[in-house]
Length: 199
Image (cartoon, rainbow, N blue to C red; front, side, top):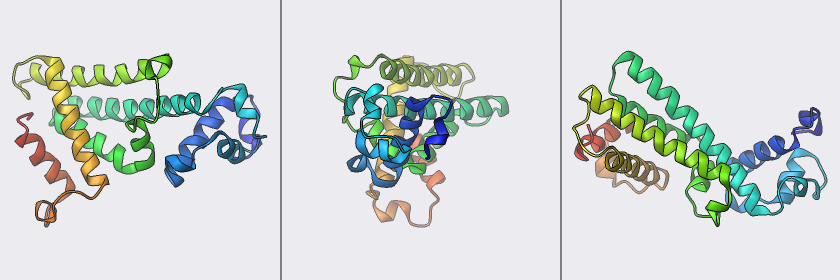
């Protein structure tokens, strides 16, 4: 990403984008303010104008990643409810695809590497927005009889926990082979959701 990429002055966004690229290629171990500066093509001191330390950079990158997740899930939700398909599965599949599409980004988002999360308001806001989206999905599905009645918050946490655990097991290649042999990932996810009494 040459310096001309941010000639309009948006160095902060260029640094965040570079951080996401480094995560995708090298994982969390390769992420540093110095490496991000090198990727963008600025001095190693330049990032400090926007991020006082690595934690601030991590918060910005994590927030951007959660924004990307929100867009992916929101788009899947809109498509599914317009076509009256299985909304819970559509959202779940979009979540798994997001995880598999960039494991480094996904692992950072839920790694605990970001300390004192409440000190970063933008991060708190987007993570709450994603949880609210899960609540909206649950309430919508209850309204069209795709999910049983029950506390929306409890079902939202159950859905998120189930799908996140599924994605993590796939990423770590921890599913027993007898579960996956001769079955597509989509079929395995659909059966997992049904077994969890969510659809």
